[in-house]
Length: 586
Image (cartoon, rainbow, N blue to C red; front, side, top):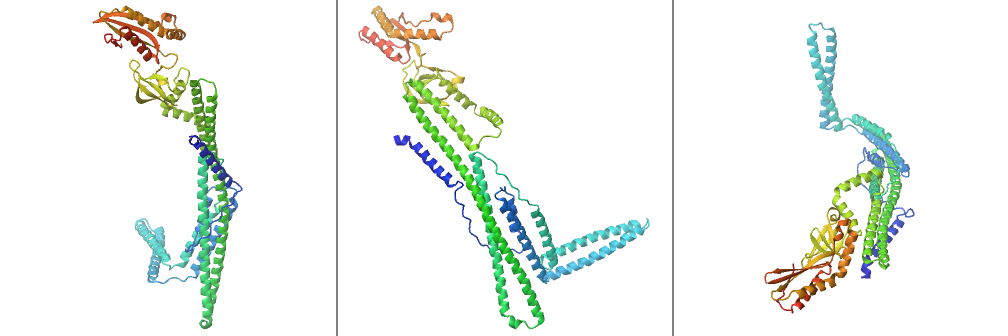
C-alpha cells in the first residue's frame, strides 16, 4: 500500500533524473555530432546548375551569424561551379561538329527555303513601301492592300524561319545557336546569383515548450537540407573524377598506338589539337572536383553549426520538460505535506476536510497555470489576451464556471460536506462525493418514509448552489416536526395513554425543543416571529371504532426513527401488548 501511494512520486523523480541527464548531455560541453560520409552518384553534369540551385535554396532559410561564413563561401563556390560547368559546355559545343542526319538535312533545307521566302517578302515590302510613297490618290488604296498582304506573308515566313531554327537546334544541326542559348542561360543564372545576399537573421527569443519544439523541428529540417547538399557535392565530385579518369585512360591508349597512326602532318596536327582540347577538359574537371570537395567541406562545417543549434534547442526543450515535471512533483509533495499537517492539528474534522480540499484545488490550479506558461510561454499582449480569453471562456464554459463558483459556496459555512444528509432538487441522500464541478448523492427514501438508502448514485452540477436551493439535514438547522398517531379501541380509557405519551414526548424532546427555539431566535429577523415555540402537543379526537391520539413534536432528523419507535413501544406497553391498539403513522 505504501509503495502504491509513493509510485507516482518515484516515477516523477526517475523522469526528472532522466531529463536532467539529457540536459547535461545536450549542453554546450557536449561533443560535436559526426558528419555523414560521402556518397556516390552517377549522373550527367553536361550543363549543371544543381550546386547553385541547392545553395540558393539553403540561403533562403534563416541564417545566423555563426552560419554566415559558410553560407557566403558556399555561394561563392557554387557560382564558380556554374561558371566552370558553362565554360566546359560551351567548349564542348564549339568543338563538336554539326550532326548531319537526314532529319538535320531536311530541317536545314526547310530553313534555307524559309530564309529565301522571307528575303523575297522583305524585298517586296520595301518595293511596295516605296511605291506607296509615290502613289497617287487613285492608286494608293490598291498599293496599300498589296503592302499589307506582303507584310502578313513576311510575318508568316518569319515564323517559319524561327520554327526551323528551333528544330535545327534541337536536332543538333546548329551548334552556334545552342551555344548562344547556353550563354544566355548562363547570363541569367549569373544575374540571379549576383542578386542573392546572405542575410543574417538574429535568433528570436522564443519562450515556451511548443515554440522550442517548433524551432527544434525547423533546425532538424535545415540540417537535413544541408546534409543533402553535402551528399550532392560528394556525388558530383565522384562523377567528375570518374570522367577525368576515363579521359586519362583513352589518352593513354592513343599514346600507345601513336607509332603507327602518325603517317602525315595533318593527322599529327589533328591529334595534337585533340590532346590540347582534352587537356583543357581534364583541367576543368580537376577544378570542378576540387570545387566540389571545398563545397562538401563547407557543408560539413555548416552542418556542425546547425547541429549545435539543434542540440541547444533540444536542451531548451528538455529544460522545459524538466520544469513541468518539477512543478508536478512539487505540487504532489506539497499536497501530501499539507494533508499530514492539517491532519495533525486539533481542528474539527469537517473544517479540516474543507480546508484541505480548498488548499488542494488551489495548488492544482496554480500548477496548471504554471504548466501552461511553460508550454506556451507568456503572451505578448497579456491584457488583450486575458480579456479575449476571459470573454470566450465565459461564453463557452458558462455552466462549468457557475458550477465552479457553486463549489466555493458549498465549501462555505452554510454549505455541505461529505457524509451530510441533504435534499437537492427533490432528491434526498447522503453526500458521497463533493468535487469542483459535481456533487454525488447516495439516494435515500423520503424523510416521511423509512429513509433508508436506495443504492442509486445521483449526480448534480454544483450550479444548484447558485441557481437553485438545497436542504442540509446534518447542520445546526436540522430540526423537523414529526407526528405519531395511536388508535385506542372503544371500551378502553385513553387518558392514561395520553398522559404516558405526553410524559414520554416531553422527556425525550426537552433538550431538542430548547436548542431548536434558541436557533430559531438567532435566525429570526422579524419580531412577529417571537411567538414560535418548539413545545410538543397532544391532540385526541374520536374516530370510528375508538379514539385517535396524535402526538406532534420537534426532533432531529437523525433521531426521528428512534424516537418514533420509542413512542410506539410506550403505547404498546400501555395497551398491554395486545393487537387491539394498532398504531398507524400519519
